[in-house]
Image (cartoon, rainbow over all chains, first blue to last red):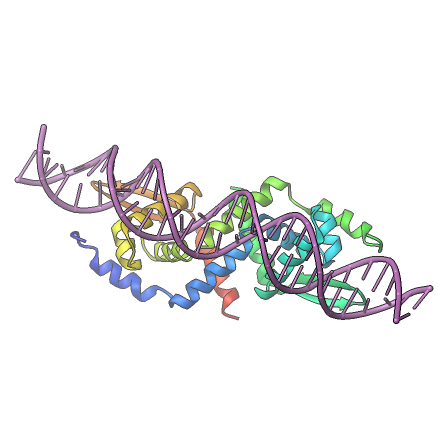
Length: 109
Length: 109
DNA sequence: AATACATATGAACAATTGTTCATATGAAAG
DNA sequence: CTTTCATATGAACAATTGTTCATATGTATT
């Protein structure tokens, strides 16, 4: 670094969240960053659905859907409730829907 | 599908955006879903910065930063302007900052 | 208990991704 | 026009990721 950016760098440094937060933030978006998961999340933003309904909707294997729902659950993006043999999934909180619609706004510019 | 979810599936189907939009949406979030890129975006949300300033801030090689800035540029998440030898990068539009802060809100629950 | 159905899990594979190293371009100054 | 500095690019490698197949839970019904 030869030119004089030190002051700005130092200041931006003070504005940065801690590493852990930035890691968690990237992790959050990484979950959204997959076509299958986005389709699942979008579907769930319209209605709670059971695994086999999602599988039929997306025309995919139950196993693949179940794997992804597990990922979404671990990331606390969805909740589930059991009703007999069937497990219904829904979005965990309103932030999830908001992030999706914000993203939608961005791409449709 | 033995049980009676057909009506709901059909309705949710009508609510789904076209495949291309969902693909673009996932693509958008995928870009956010990397620690290095999130750190870059967060830094740029505070101040426009040149490549070597970002490199110093994140304590990474210029090459790695340049590669990622290229990805961000192709995804239209950042703009750049040249001033002599130096190239300054900044966030492309306000949506980018909004998405980051929405994400931040979500993880700090 | 045995069967059927919905969902979950584990292992394995192919595909994608981010970084590094080496090298190339672009721009100003000597 | 050669040197120096800032940035960009290409190829290659290691690491991560999503899906599939096979199999295992879990829950109700007979």
